[in-house]
Length: 426
Image (cartoon, rainbow, N blue to C red; front, side):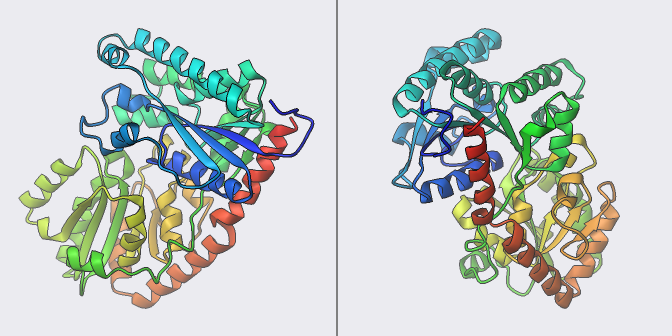
C-alpha cells in the first residue's frame, strides 16, 4: 500500500453491491467516485453479490444479473470493476443453511478482495455501506492490508431490514444486524453519513463523532433539469392535459405507497384533471391496483414499472408534482432519498413529509411539508398544487436553485475528496 504519510490520493478501491448502481447508496458513491476519476484518480470496484439476492429476495429473472454474465461495463477510462460471485453449490446452500453459506461466502469474498488489493495497491478503501457482506469484506480487507477505510452510512440498515420483514427493530434479526453494523462503523477509520440524524444515531451507538463527516446526497443538475425532452414519456403514457403527480422509487408500504388510494379518491372526488404516475416496482403494486379497480379508481393511476436510471430525468420533467412521502418510522427519519434531490434538480413542486432526513434538506420555501402521519394533509397539498400552477413554478424554481447551490454532485465531490485525503492521513 502507498504510505499513509502522503496526502496524494491516486488509487481508490470501492466495495459495493452493484456496479453500475442499482440502489441509492451505490448511486451516491458511484457519482462521487466518478468525479474522483475525472480528477485523474483510478477507481476500482469490488462488487459482491447482494445479500438480498443470495437470500432469494430478488426475482429469478432479475435483469441486473445480466451484468454478471456480460462483465462490468466500461464507463470511464480510470474506472474498472469486478464481480465477486459464489458458485452454484454455495448459492444453493443459501437456500438450505444460511449461517454456513454466509460464512463460506464472506471467506471467499475476503480472499478474492485481498488478491485484488495486492495487485491494485489502493491508497484508500471505501465501503459503500456497513452491510453483513459488503461492509464486512471491506473492513476485513482493510485491516489485513493496513489500508485506511472510509465507510459510508447512507441509511439505517437495521431499521431497513425490520421494515422489509415487517418486524420489530428489537427482534433477533435486526438486533444481530445492528451489532454487525455498529461494529463495522467502529472499526472504520472514518465514516461519511448522509444526514446529521444518522451521525447522531451512530454517536449514540458508540462511534466517535469526530470520525464522522456528513456528506448529503445530491443530483446531477445538468441531467435532471426542467428542459428535458418529455415528448416520448407523455405520448406513451398519455400524459397530455393532465396534472401529473409522480411517485417514484420503492413501491412499498414502508415507502409511503399506502396513501395512493386515498389520494386517487380525493383527486377523483374533486374533479381534478390529474394522473398519479408510479415509477418503480414493489411487492404491493398488484394489491394496490386490485383495490383501485375495486373502487373504480384505476383510471387515476398509471404504473410505468421499473425504469432505467437514464430514463428518470424525462419522467421527473414530465411531472407537475412530485411526492416524497414516508411514514413516521425510524427508517423514514434516517432516510435521505435520492429522489428528493432529483425532484429538486428537475424544478418540481414537491410534497414531502416532515421526517428528519428531508427537513435537513428543504424547508417550507422549497416544498410543501406535511406531517408524516397525515394522509389528509398530503391530499390537501396535492389538490392545492394541482389548482395553482404559479405556486408549483415558484416552489420548483427555489428547489432547483437550492440543488444547484448545495447538492450538485460536482460540489459534493469536493467534500468527498477532502474526506478521502483525510482518511489517507489518518
